[in-house]
Amino acid sequence: MLGLIINIANITGGVLLGIALLDQWDGEKDFFNKIAKALVPFQTIIGGALVVLSLLFLFKGAALLYNLTSLVGGFLLLTPVISKAPAFQKTLYQLEAKLMPFKAGIGVALIVIGILRIF
Image (cartoon, rainbow, N blue to C red):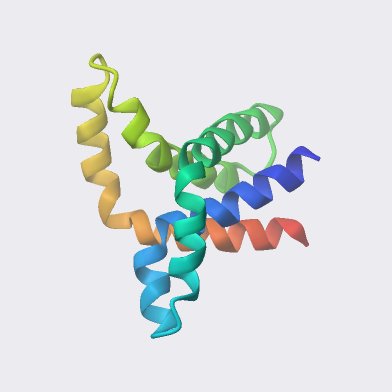
């Protein structure tokens, strides 16, 4: 059951993170934009699920690369929420600045990981 939840969180989080790249591939159909607009209110829940479940699976010792990618994707989704805490702001902004150029790539990787883990 947890495996299915992390797969869904990977795919939905990947759509949210990779929307810039997916929109270019989609052309004028706006398919991914419509999905992303529906998912934006759940961004914090998806990011939290990715962080918690990827840490859980990391401690179990399963699929290190998949879970690290999910953890980074969850962190990027939770950045707006975590940045409200004053103690984390400076470190968080530095880390976010380093990860932002890879945001779309991480999003596409999350989609691929979610689909691969289903099978």
